[in-house]
Length: 163
Image (cartoon, rainbow, N blue to C red):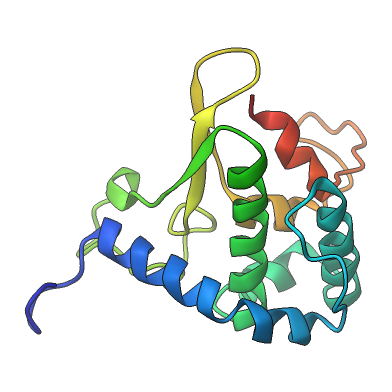
């Protein structure tokens, strides 16, 4: 462990966050109001999607609440579902952020998804890649893509990104 005057390294931050999220899973499950079906299956992502859509009405609300226990639990649940069903692992690497001082702690930055844990693995179509579970939650509220084409995002779509 780092000394009191040393900031934890990203891997240590991630390990602590993963441990805490797993430890608080039952409390988070109760907070969702939906006690059945939390089995890390593709179908359980539909349950989570329903809960997220009932709790929030736009993507900015999800982003604003990213430090809340509910959103952190949802991020962890999405990522764990990916990890358990696809070839992917948890990562947190803030080095790609613009240098503005020390690396942000998990979920404490203001740069969208980049300061949150993500899933890394073999992506469909070949190669390695990463997907942010927080991004999948935010995208639930998008009505069109970057090209202006209509989209109907589903939370379970994140599973289709990985082999």
